[in-house]
Amino acid sequence: MRIIFMGTPEFALPSLKILLEHSYDIAAVVTSPDKPQGRGQKLTFSPVKELAIARNLRLLQPESLKAPDFVSSIAHLQPTLIVVVAFRILPREVFIIPTAGSINLHASLLPRYRGAAPINWAIINGERETGVTTFFLQEKVDTGSIILQARASIGADETAGELHDRLAELGAEIVLRTVRQIELGTVRTQMQDETYATPAPKIFKENCLVDWRKSAQQLHNFVRGLSPYPCAWTTHKGKTLRIFRTQPLADEPAPAQAAPGTVIEVRNTCLHVHTGAGVISLVEIQLEGRKRMGIAEFLRGHHVEVGDQLG
Image 1 (cartoon, rainbow, N blue to C red):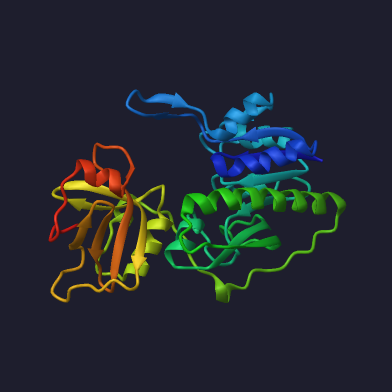
Image 2 (image 1 turned 180 degrees about the horizontal axis):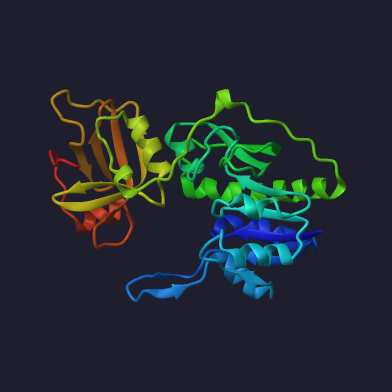
């Protein structure tokens, strides 16, 4: 079985590694072009490219997935299967090339949370369970027939970053099982039930602004669903304040006269903020131009007073 693997970020690494560990023939790895990053705008390799180089795998980095030379190069490799994990949307002329089809690993229990940010939205929406799904690609994004799924609980304080790492490992196991079934001809698929379809669109910086009018629990879910990236943010005295961890305080009374976003308590190890319903404690934050730190360390070097307004 000749496999072409397509992926770019850290999430894709466990899946590529597990296929290599089980001696599958990886005919080529396709990943995004190198991108300039940092102040020096130095070109950096994707995590998948770094692994491909380390394992001496054939590497393709097309600017356009519809470019005739790229399509022909994929066809020339005569793949049995294309495995896609955290990559771009494949055009039809590419995903129909393999004799056994093209599969994708998605970080949700499809049809729930179709889109670019399923992990983030599941946590933001307060879900207690999510999972991973493999499915056959078709033209409409994330709508193909389901092959396998695996469920995973979401911890009450778990962040998107923590869940991301767990689902990447769980997803790798499901990718391996899926490839084995395809190889053996034992695949049994099921259509997605459109009545359960929900969106998980890409999240931009402007979507990450904290709305203090929401309840403490809603804000807790919002913060952890965006942590560590792209990260929830507010402002304090004109400077951006990024928030990585919080804790809702169910038993903490809030002053009726305080507006949402008002700091209502400051002590050596705590900073409590009034919300639209309840109180939330800021646990780990980062002020503009400073490093990320716990609240006790932050308060030792920054002056915050009761009555200060965030946002």
